[in-house]
Length: 166
Image (cartoon, rainbow, N blue to C red; front, side, top):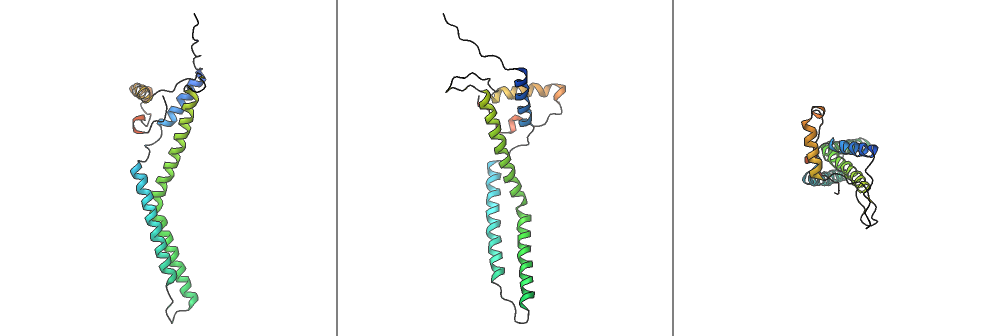
């Protein structure tokens, strides 16, 4: 009778690496919601359209008869710069939110990659260690929160998308 060999347990260093990945992930602030991202995108589109409209209006203005062209040109440039400045000020929060979302995509991709590296690969039957599922990670986090050693730990896996494929 042939026996199936059990996979070799992961090394202490591997477990520490996985723990560090999990700690980094759980220290992240909540990810912006889809609604927030859509609103930020819509806000930027609206601001860009408004900016272009205002800039076009300024460009088509004609100088009054008694104002030198050079002086009127300076006024136009000031108005255009003011439109750009106001648009920039109004779009800061939306841009920040979209940049945060891109960073979270990067975090998610890296977490997914780590998960794939330690999860079973069914196509090639290579045995790899499995990362905890959302339920396992949540239970573990609850146990850690009960411990005095982890009272100051911030973040919760319950408030972030969990990308581990279990």
